[in-house]
Amino acid sequence: MSAPTSGAPNMEVKVVSQEMALLSNILAAYTFIADQPERTALVFLGGVCVGLFFTLCAIVFQIHCRADCHYDNMADWDDTSDLSSRRRRRFERALLHATMFTSAEELDRAQRLEERERILREIWMNGQPDISTVTQSLNRYY
Picture 1 (tube, rainbow, N blue to C red):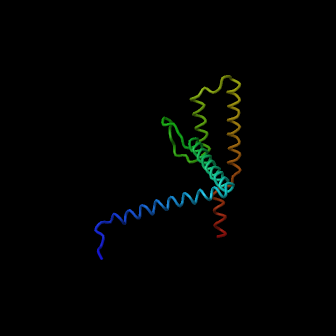
Picture 2: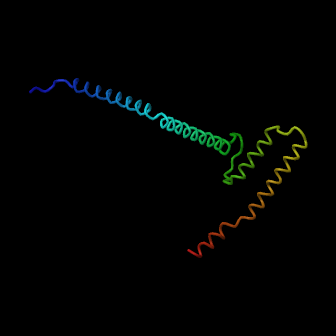
Picture 3: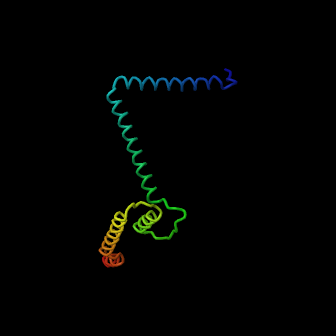
């Protein structure tokens, strides 16, 4: 018994068997699709719908991040973590940099709307319980 001196025949068998396995898998997939076209179409459309859903989520996330996380480089930055105050500052910067009002009536309407929003924010903030008193009352029970 002599041992093979090179590994080429062994390598060739592996390549051929991988090609045959690939061909066998392709034929099995074709047979499945030919036998069950409705099921295949349903799976395909389900995949398309899931892909569209993820794409929609990615677009909404991108728009949300662009709206909340984008700041001008020239704008002054302070460390306020309140989201409403950041939005208010962004709105005020937009009012300063853009000529969005063409008439005095529109400017007056926008100022009244801004004042109304400020009043509503104050009412909402005054109606919220103080966090320290809530935690103190919880500490009594635990």
